[in-house]
Each structure stands twice: as structure tokens, then as C-alpha cells.
Amino acid sequence: MPSDTDLTSDYLHKLLEYREGKLFWKVNRGKARAGQEAGFVGNRGYVLIVVNGKQRMAHRLIWLMHGKELPEMIDHIDGNQLNNNIENLRAVTNSQNQRNQKLRKDSTSGIKGVSWISTRKRWSGQVWHKGKLYRAGDFHDKDECAMAVRQLRESLHGEFARHE
Image (tube, rainbow, N blue to C red; front, side, top):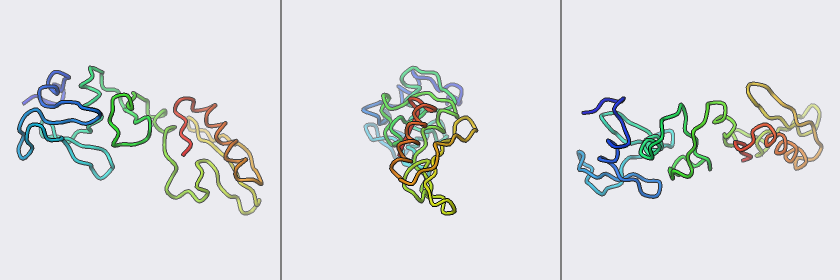
């Protein structure tokens, strides 16, 4: 059985077939039969597939299968961890990946980068970039604050800006 370092596009193509962002077994493997969709959704929301006795993220296997060298990280452009279409994947640095994060579940405003400052009775806008906090300003109007944050995020994060 090939080791982790022997995972190649050719080897993966012998085991798996890529179709529209999903992988299907070409061979019988344990309970899985040839033609069956490979993998399962893990507890972090990514599709995982066991290859060579180790759980691997499907998007990383798909990346390799398309003849690309594995980067440190692969980003789902649309933020959907289950959308493993090769067109939705891109190589990123950790910093770029952080810029593409979704709205936090504990957000009180419902808008990324916007928070209510009760002592000032204003909406405050801010964006983190490369470990530094950038302020968009304070606003009486929540929508104005959201627009200022959006513009600031786009200028700092470029193609990696995610507003929701």
C-alpha cells in the first residue's frame, strides 16, 4: 500500500473518479462498492475519505487529482465546504483563508465587522487584516456602518473579501 508521500494524481485516479465536485469509488473497498460515492461528512463539515487507512479531506484529493501540487491550504471560494467543484477551490495562505471567513455565529449585529457600542450609542465598524485592526468609523445608522465596513474590507482583502 502506498504511503502518504506516494499519493499522486495517477494513484488517486486508479481508486476514484471525479464527477462534478464529488468522488466515486472505481474499486470495491470494504463495504464501499465501485460506483458508490466516496466519503462522509465529518464533524467539521468537510467531506472525508479514507485512503491508505487515513481520513483525508475530499477537496485536497480533488486538488491532487487535477494535477496540482498540494498547498498549505485550499479555500472553498463560495464558503460552502461541501462544494468541492474544482472551480470552487483555490490555493491560499493561512492569512488569505482568514480573510474569507463567514460571519461569526455569535455576531450581535448580524453584519460582519459591525457592532453596537452602547456607551457611545453608535454602530462601530472594523476589519482585521494581517494582525492589525482597521477602523471604518462610528455611525448612527447601522446600514451606513455596514457599507463603510464593506468598502474597507474590499480595499484590504481584495478577492478574498467575504461580507456575510
